[in-house]
Amino acid sequence: MLSKLPFFFIFYFSINIGYGQENPEVKIIDNNSKLIVQDTISSQPIDALSPSRAAFYSAVLPGLGQAYNKKYWKIPIVYAALGTGIYFFIDNTNQYNRYRDAYKNRLAGFDNDEFWGTDSEGNPLSSPSISNDGLIRAQRTLRRNREISLLVTIGLYALNIIDANVDAHLLQYNVDENLALKPHFIINDLDATTNLGLTLDFKF
Image (cartoon, rainbow, N blue to C red; front, side, top):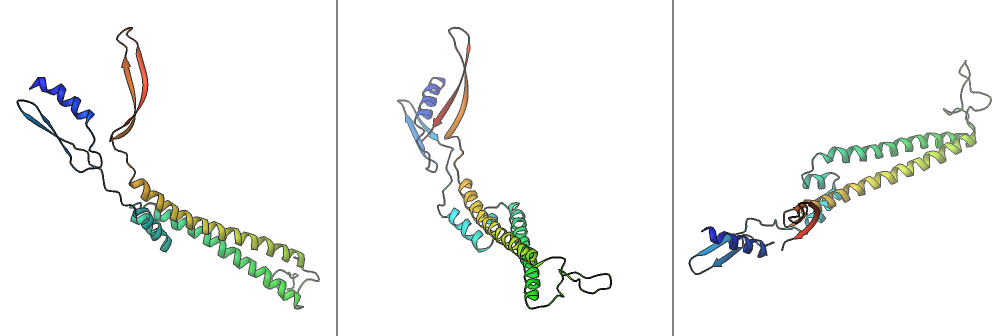
C-alpha cells in the first residue's frame, strides 16, 4: 500500500483539471487494484445577471441593491448620504426663495421685506440694511449652492447604484485555492542557505 502513495500524489496534483465541474472523478488503475480520487473542490455557479439585477434594484429604490447583496450595514449609509444631499438642496432652495421674494418686493416699490431692517421703534430704516446688490449676490450664491447640492445628490444616487453593481461582482469573485499567489521558503542543500521566493499558481 505504501508503494502506491507517491504515484497517487504525483498523479493527483498533475491531473487537477476538474475545476468548474461538479465532483469530477479520476481513476488510477494498475495491475492489482483500482484507486478512485474524488476532487473536493467545486466552483459555485456564476449568475451573470446578478450585478445588473443589483444595480436595477438600487436604481428603483436606493439601498435595495445593497439588501439584495446582503450588505445590510450599507443601507443606513446610503440613506444618510442621500438625506444630507437632499437637506442641503431644500435649505438652499428655501433661502434662495427668501432673497428672491425680498428683491421682487423691492422692485414693486415696497420697503417692508425682512432684509430691509427697522429701527428701535419698529419703523423701516431710511436705507435697507441689505442693499439690492446684496440681495442679487445672495441669490447668485444660493442658486450656485443649490445646483451643487443637486449634483452631489445625483452623484450619491449614482454611487449607490455603482456600489451595488460592484458588490455583486465581487461576491462572485473566485478566491479559492485554484488561483493562488504564495511565498515559498526553500533550503539550498548545497550550501545550507535559504532562498525566499514568490510563485503564482494556476490550476485548471
